[in-house]
Image 1 (spheres, one colour):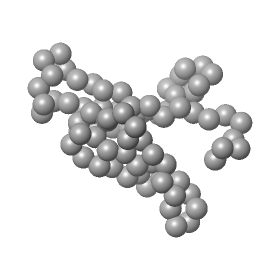
Image 2 (cartoon, rainbow, N blue to C red):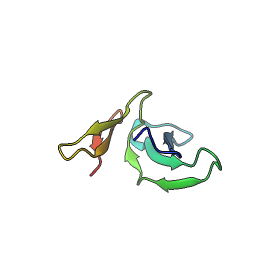
Image 3 (tube, rainbow, N blue to C red):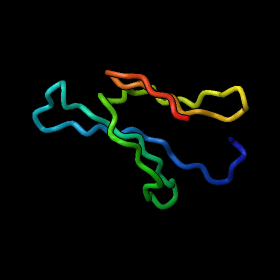
Image 4 (cartoon, rainbow, N blue to C red):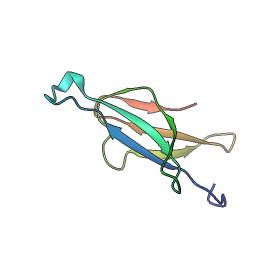
Length: 79
């Protein structure tokens, strides 16, 4: 909703181990307060890295929005 006075940021973070084996790549999606920088919520670990420009809000049949995104290894849709 673009009329909201406060909008949290939705970001993707990569959690790659130092040795960066393909099988160990994970990411999380996080909601951040843009004014304080505090984390509002963090998703469970996701399989693979979230590529740039892959987070979207998709409309649903009831008018609500659903967060959809993909990683290099999977596609996700929130409820």
